[in-house]
Image 1 (cartoon, helix red, strand yellow):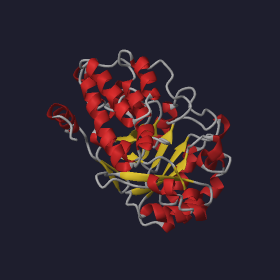
Image 2 (tube, helix red, strand yellow):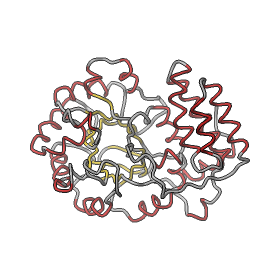
Image 3 (cartoon, helix red, strand yellow):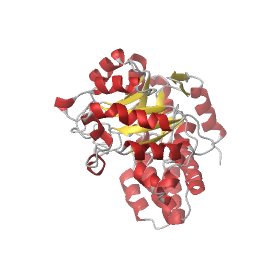
Image 4 (cartoon, helix red, strand yellow):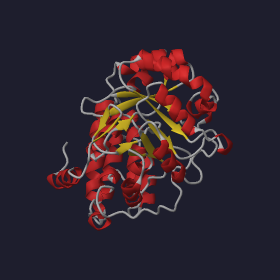
Length: 358
C-alpha cells in the first residue's frame, strides 16, 4: 500500500525542510538519524522510519559469533531492503579476528558502513567482553579497530557511551583512538555503562566533547520529544543526533522535529497512525514468513504507537491477547477508526522502557 495523498503530502512538505549532511565520507538525508535498537531495528522498521523522515539508520546489534556460525536467524538480521538508503550494520563482539570475519560477511549485504557496538550495557554482552566492556581497555582498542578496518572496503564507525562508570569516563580518549584508526564518525550515548538507562543523559558532556572531537560526533540519549529534539538540533555542537525510544511512541518524531511547535499541533492524527501501521504490516509480511512471527514483530510496535491515545491501555491488553495477525490488525483498525482522527497526548514524565533501547 501507499500512504494516502493527504498523509504523503504532509510528509513531503516537511521533508523539504531536511538538510542533507555528510559525516566523514558517509552521506545522510538529514542530521536526525535512527539509533540502533535491539529486536526493533530490522529492515521493515528502518524503512518505515526512512519513509517518515529519518535521515539514515543503523541496524539492531548483531552478534559476530552468530554471523560466523551462519545462524539462519542472524543472517536474516543482516538483510537490507533495496529501498533503504544511508544504512549501517552494527556488529558486536570482543575478538578482533572474529569481528573482522563477520564484518566481511556483513559488507556483502550492501550496507553503507559497518558500525561497532561499544555501548551496549546488557550483562550477557559485556561479560564476554563486548559492547561497553570495550571501553574499559583503551590500550587494546587500536589493534581491535585496525584489524576490522583492514578487513572491509566500506567505512567503519563506532557507537559508545561516556565510559564504563563515573570514575572511568574516557570517551574523549576513545574518540582520539578511533580517529587514528580511520573511523569515520562516533555516536555517543550520554550515559555510562553503570547507569544502564537510569537517570538523565549527560548532554553537557556530549556538547563539550563535540567541540573538541577530531571526528564528527552524533549525540544520543533522551531525545523522546519532538520539541526537545528540535531545540537540541538548533543549538547542538554535534554534527547529527540519533533518536531511539522517541520513535517508538511517536513514529513521526523525525518529521515533527523539523517544524515549529505551532505547526506541529494536530499535524498527525490517529488516522495517520493507522496508515503507518498498515505500511509496517506490509513491510513485515514482506520480510518475515509465518503468521506467528509476523504477529510477534508487529504487536509490540502497534502497542507503542498507540501510547497517548484515549483507551490505549485497554487496547494494549486486547492486542496482546490476539492469536493471529488478522485478529490483531482487525482490533487495531477498529481502535484507530473509533478515535475519529484524535491526536495523542503522551506523558513524558512517565518512565518508558528504562531497561533498554537507547
